[in-house]
Length: 80
Image 1 (cartoon, rainbow, N blue to C red):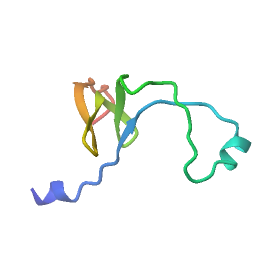
Image 2: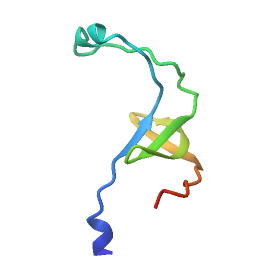
Image 3: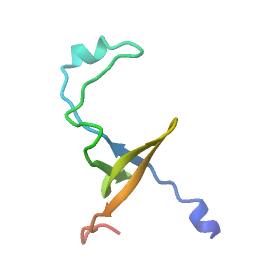
Image 4: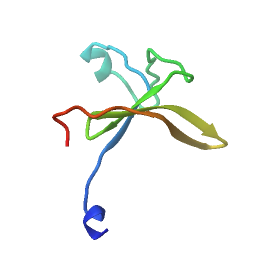
């Protein structure tokens, strides 16, 4: 197990996307709200090192937010 402890993995959960001009992004301040093209009930995409690995849903319990994995995506032949 010591070798697994040294593996670095970046996990990203994509809740939605939007398009904005750069000048609008530069004007954003602390606490700005950015509207996404998804609702809280939509599936989220789960990425590992920027590669899609699963789909899930957002779960809110009290003041905790989690992501429940619903489906693991098949790996491509070129991904190890």
